[in-house]
Image 1 (cartoon, rainbow, N blue to C red):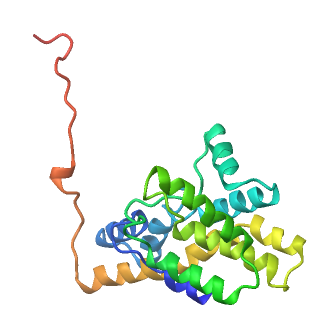
Image 2: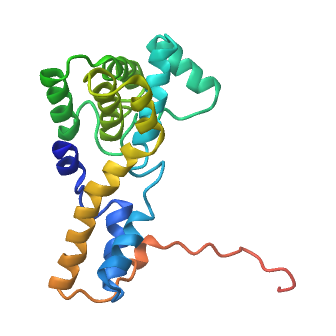
Length: 214
């Protein structure tokens, strides 16, 4: 749990949550408003894929699917595989957070059936594109399923209750809140003014011809 909180605390100012926090802070808003602005961006595309990844991969294991059958099933259902893919990280530029988590699980967990399955899926998805890696959301999700199921501290019913309650996304929210608060305090310390989006990143689409005008 400590490792997850540390690894999810921050990932730079460019991600949507940190960006929103910074923009809100520079608009003169208070800490709580700025933090909430960042947290509201968490969802399927940013930080909110942990629960989905845990559910998808654990269900595939429980159904006895092979990694290829799982990928085919997701494709046929036109679903993205939660926990797979990263905008920047790839086989050539691996995510160190993922490597740390994998090593910890292998060194300390009695069993890692769901994480092992996800790693096999990654071997297939990266054949298509090298950035279709098992990302930090997917690694946390699968590892936590293995922790709940095989640590001996929870009954199967208790494990499923936790997994279905949103507790895993809660871990990301808790960890990343630390980073968002840091970004807010940085903006106040630096006395940054109101944020304005760079003009060269704005494209105005003008009509080539306006009806009624010659």
